[in-house]
Length: 555
Image (cartoon, rainbow, N blue to C red; front, side, top):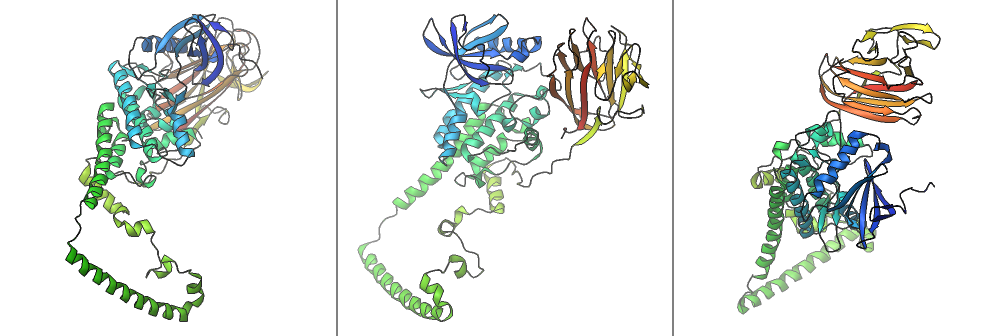
């Protein structure tokens, strides 16, 4: 196994000792501050992103933003620097997190106590409300980012996906699928402060019910469930929850931000009131039972006499019943095998708890009426909405055709211009491909921009709705300074417009990349332009690229 080059290295006053975790764009290491002799966590931008200015800027912005904050429930930044190409910053080290704690409860088949749920929930809510007042949306609220210190302090960490609330992004999806809000599942640019509160709502649901509301091995399927499926009742997983608590969770997990709680403080105040109502009901019931006064002694004698007479009658009836049963089912009576379902007139037995506490067996109609009385939150139906079937609209690999009426148009532009011209389908040296001047070509499995030109695949929509563009690309030949793969939406002005996606491939990058860009809404006539752009040197630019456009998502 290859040794991590950072292990054992000293960055400023901090020695890197071991690897802790890997996130979307960074690695986190355990280290030690040699000056102050204390443990620290060191976050280093991943090697894949060191040469990408946009990611480096986002990484630096995280350190700069959080370092200026002072909040007891937000991770503290001690130091930040750029050394020999390593962008890194140093944070306080906290060993445990909510994800580990929930896993321990699950392993022991237990649920977190409501008081602890409220304590952790309040801390996270305070951290989010503070960040939101600073114009920052976290975008990745999940248990592994909620750290629990030895002294019980709760700390929210990893603001790596946070951006200024007014900036947004186009065609990107950030966040963890199990905890992602519906609007963020469509597009990270649509995230709002209530998106973070939705993620907090998922965590509260998990702490109280013992599981997340939506789960599937496929990340895409989970995201679609957040978008389209009704939230399952948490009371089916934890029957001890009262309707008020369920109503709070339903509101926190509303599909639309406007229908959720508008601040973390509001959410936690409502949850505390709901859980307190549950405890008050139980306490009131216990006190009611304890405060029942004993009857006077004469009544006690009468009661005892009635009980004796009743027992005598029961014994008499029981004896007759046994004799009657012995005639029809001697073996069953002898073995004591008569079940509650056999004794039930309709053949359906009830559990002891249901029989003893019929009020706990709440049906759908009763639950609906209860929620209507205790909350203004509408009851979410338990029947899930069917997930639409994805459709592949265009595929550069399978749709490669001589007909220009197909899903793609093949274009090229002279160096440094926006003079896009159609290519012609011909049989030449490199086979049956779309060609332009020189050796500019687009074939079924590869393409070459030739002597400094740009080449492109153009797709025009005929549908209305969400689409996903899935890209796979790598260099085929070696050498040169590589190419740039870029995607433009509704424009041919590649020299002046900002691409919605841009990914360079170095001259020897034969591993390449696989990425997806999601568009929340396209309309008939909208276009996507997928471009391979040359760098300064057009030598050795032979590149593999496959693109698929799919309705909703690519299977």
